[in-house]
Length: 409
Image 1 (cartoon, rainbow, N blue to C red):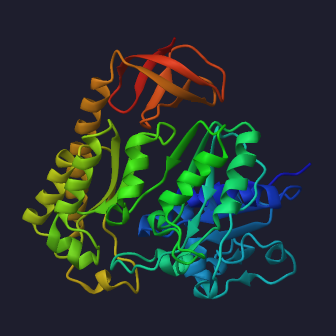
Image 2: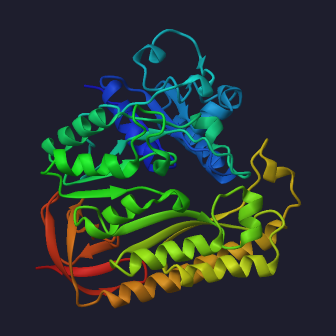
């Protein structure tokens, strides 16, 4: 039977939706490019993937969907390699994939609900990703994602629990909760539940779930109830990825972020005082108006928040955003600052990995059986193969600066 070829770019939410597209397009020989628009380079990468896919599969129907397609449908429809463009609001609706209409992209802000789309399992993945929230009500001055995803909307807890239970039954040992703005979960639902209450219900109603991981969180929306779960619940993995973006208060204000530098530092201190948790963060280098002193504040945040899983983004102006109209930092300066952030993050990560030597980590083994991830999300290379999909104790013997190495115990 034919099978679609899925090319996924960008976030974990896209990864979750791609598995649903794989299931709903079973039997087709389509190439589906699930695009990203978070930066200019992400859009360029999407275009490059489209051209490469057309060269490799000249006879297949090539469909582009995802955030870049939602934001600029005409631009992608104009590419000679593309047969069809489908928006984010339509891509998981079977009717959007029938007929001859080349562009099916509606107003994403008219979408009022979302759902945990039912791929039977995650082919080739031992971790499964469950969408519990989509869209964003905030308007950070650098970000186009609300225009690709729409306003914030949440999945009812009952549907999420059913989805998680089905994935555990299918053999997944770890589930990752995903969303565009995960910590904004709930206010649009009856009773206005919180992310913390959702997690409590998942853990209570799916007792066989071994590992629950959270994708990126907005630090200012992490409340006391959620903190108690993060520090006190063993099945919630000790890994926290924060959407920080900058470490300077003036830049944060110009980004229209809702937290101050001190808020982020206090949150990390409070959590790490009670549990050994690995901190990840998104940081942008070279935001408009950023001076050297402002940049140094972001650079120093890596040490102050003990960031060991850093995602560094060189700022790129997105058309139509307020930041694109602000005084820009020279591109050479942006590149240099991004390099300095990456170097500081790599140094911090290497030191953290070194501190884990001699420990034993419970590693979820992934393909091809000689690698996996520890609870703290450190990647581990195994010196001997272990069964894929199993959680095995691994004695850590060293690291290469980016990942751990270890021996299955």
